[in-house]
Structure formats: structure tokens, C-alpha cells
Image 1 (cartoon, rainbow, N blue to C red):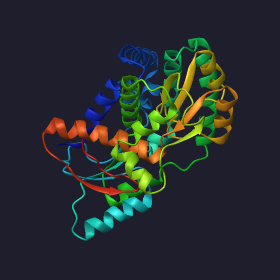
Image 2: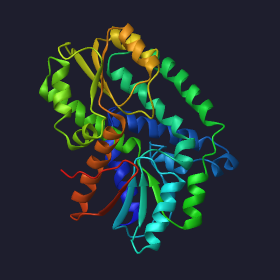
Image 3: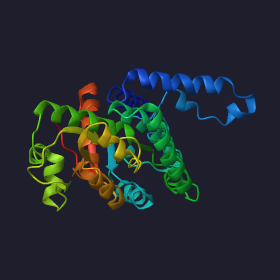
Image 4: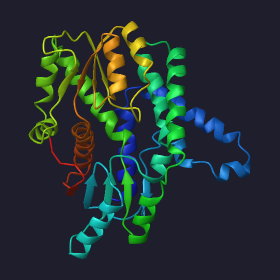
Length: 319
């Protein structure tokens, strides 16, 4: 399968799994096209044309010929220069690697990923927070993250891949959307009463089983085994951790439990202040789940199994 086809497939499936719904995404892309059409010719030259069809700034081809055939992929949750150098060494030892796929964004996908946080407006709105309120609290978070990104040296990964001529792409929100849609559906089907039931549910999946073996089992951060769940919100997409002000609004909207990948101590304390239970499923394990669900779909599409070289915390589990 060609690199371009893999990329297009990931974007398509990311959209289908997006918790905001297709209508919201279409409206977002339409707004971008209208914005683009009003620009001068000079400004159009620097416009990110891909963003007109790909709503996920953090899921991109960073380097490589889009027409290369891909059969063997090296996949890692975090890919930095050392992993690309590792790939080069493996290639020199006779291993074929057609493409590196990183989960977390790097290069341009990292420089611009603050744009993804805007997703959280519609995600929070679906949980019952008024859209005008969600827009305000999320915009503050976007500004905060954008400022944090400004001093970063974000071209190191691109430069390394280019100098070694190894194709690389990122698959962040397209995978995270799959974690949310999968776990939210599983929890709603289960209809758990107590938090321990969600922990037991997570323990059935190989990604969380593996994490438990290496000391990173899902756990209850706020609440106890027999705390009642109430309405459960799986919060695992939207670029990064949500705004601290969202917890007060989620309490008012009737959310009883949040299932998340990770939560800062500051946000965990705020959730507890507003009587919201929190289950931390695990960061790398949840990232693995999203990537594996995406790869399952890809292999089902082409009716063949890719050869995977696992690195940087990624483990391939097929369903």
C-alpha cells in the first residue's frame, strides 16, 4: 500500500471515529475553505492547504515520497532522532523499513497541534456545557499551549528523517478518536454502576493487560471501587489535557465520572473539588489501543498483515 493511501485512510477513519460527529467536521472544513478564499495570493502561498481536507493538524506525513510502497513499518508512541537513528542502524543490518509511524506529533504536526484543541469545544458541548462557555474556556487553553510551543525547536525530527532519507508520518488525533469511540461505546454497553466495573472492563483489553504487567495498570484516581459512576465521559482526544475550568462546568452538566489517559495533579484536584470521579486508564496503553484499532482497520482494508517493528512503547495487538 502506498504511503499516500495509508495517510488518506487514517484521516478518513479518524473523521468517522471523531466524537464531535461528521456535521461538525464538515462545518469546520467549510469555514477553513471560506477563510482561504478570502486571502490574498501572497498569503495563500503560505497557507496549509492540507488543512482544507484534513481536520487534524497533528496527523501528517512529515517526510517521504507519498508514492512509496509500504509493507514494513516501524511504529513508536514517541519517535525522536534516536529512534530514527535506530531505524537506520536496523536498515544497515539488513532489516527493511519502509516507513516510520509516530503516534505523538513531531515537526510541523507538533508546531501546529494547538489547533486541534479547538475540538474540545464541541466535545464539551456534547457533554452538556453551553457552547459559548465551552468556547471561552477552551480558547484560554489554546492560547496557553500555543505560547508553550513558540520557543520549541520543532524541525529536528524532520531534519533527521530527511538526512537519513527515511519516510515518517504521525498519527495522533486520528488514533485518539478511536480510543474514545471504542471505550465510550463499551462503557455505555456495559452500563456500569460502580467504578470497579470500569477497571475490570479495561482489564479485558490486551493493551491494558500489558501495561499492568509492567506496572502501569489502570487505577481510580478520584473515588473508590464502590463509588457510583453516574454519567461517564471518556475524555481522551482533543490534542492535550482539557482546561481546568471545565470541571466545574462538567459537574453542572451532570458528569459523574471521567475516564482519561492522564491528568495533571492540578486538574485532578479540581475534579475532586467538583465531586467528579476520575479513572486513569493509562497514557501509553491508551495510545496503543488507538493505534491498534486503526491498524486493524488498515489491515482489514488491504486483506494483508503489515510487518511491524515495535519500538518506543508501541505493542501490536491484533483483534
